[in-house]
Length: 212
Image (cartoon, rainbow, N blue to C red):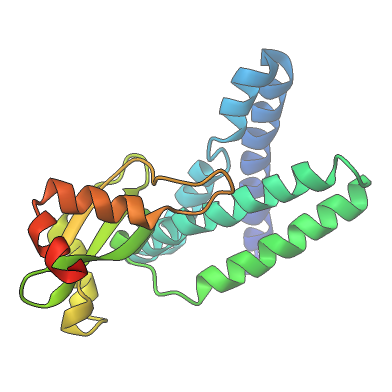
């Protein structure tokens, strides 16, 4: 067989296997009810066979880079789903889906501009604020939310910051949390984080000196 025919047959086989996984997941979703269906729908159904096929043509570094980039891109997919869910309540299918896809492409394009590392992909959100310091007047504190199943250390975060920021901007205090204190409108209440750090790290005397 010619190389072109082999390529076409191989591509068709890959598409068929991937489609079979997706269709199977769809059938399970339709017959298992909303809860089980939602669990199945959120699984990386097509990612498994896709990575297997990619591994046949690319080295380990390429596969690792692709898997790493897929973590932040999942955030854009979440935005797509939420956008469609909100718009579909008031508008038709075509308009809702079109706007959601445009937003997804914009988000994915913005994410591609960032040089993702295991650290940046593992961290979900960070809130940075100042706390009183007896020597430098104020120092940097950071509350970090890590993605489920990921592990990050304080030293990894500091090393990442040292390579990109001035020394005085590197967080002195780092705390891993599951959630940030929020207002009813969804804004982060950094003053509560600051108060918590002052109390936890016994910085009341320094804080009182600054306000005296």
